Length: 288
Image 1 (cartoon, one colour):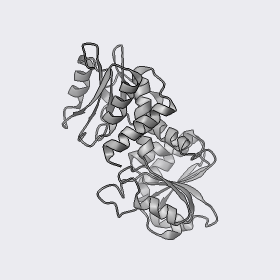
Image 2: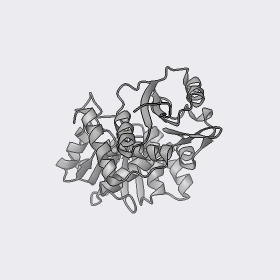
Image 3: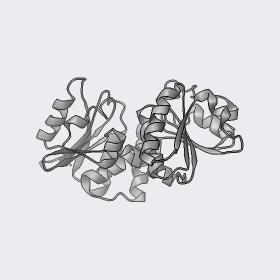
């Protein structure tokens, strides 16, 4: 029941109408007896600073941040968590005494999702498809979780080379390298890789697309992890399975980035049973 003691959290971005986050947070708050509500706030371009200051003035406990503001919001924060600073993107704001502190729960959310799905990073040779902001963040996660090798595959290898150089500088060794998408054929045929799909190719409504369609590529993949969650089964995932691999989508990443944000805002620990309750609420909101 909303009353004078109800705390408010929310989401800022543009657009926000499609968000599944209210299903996660309001379900958790209700199940845990937390007097908290979560609502989306559309923020027009050019009004981000006002939105952050307004949220502070209105005593909001925390915010999620979605596109296009994950990097743009950083100058308006009081403090940055080290991981968010390293990645250069923030998706969760937590209220402190004198401003908001920025966190990145996307990558910890992906890692928790992969662990729940039984997918390991440590010691793995990883094919990372894409070279945008998401791929850069994933590359840093792979570094932190001790991947054995990172091969960035992108249509324009120059962007991938930039990320590889950055990762190698952080690692202090040659951990990552970049290839054009078509140059996957130079990879050893005997190797089987973990492949992470970090582009928007195949996202609804373009569900018939995949960044690579050659069956030979997918025969080298033992596990394919697509960060897209709509559709629930992407063309990439179907091709992974056709090649004999196991495929996962990004729905649990979406869940766990929210769960970790909720834990930051409330200090609570969300157990496995409540995770599943929120997961089912999110799937119901999506109609799947």
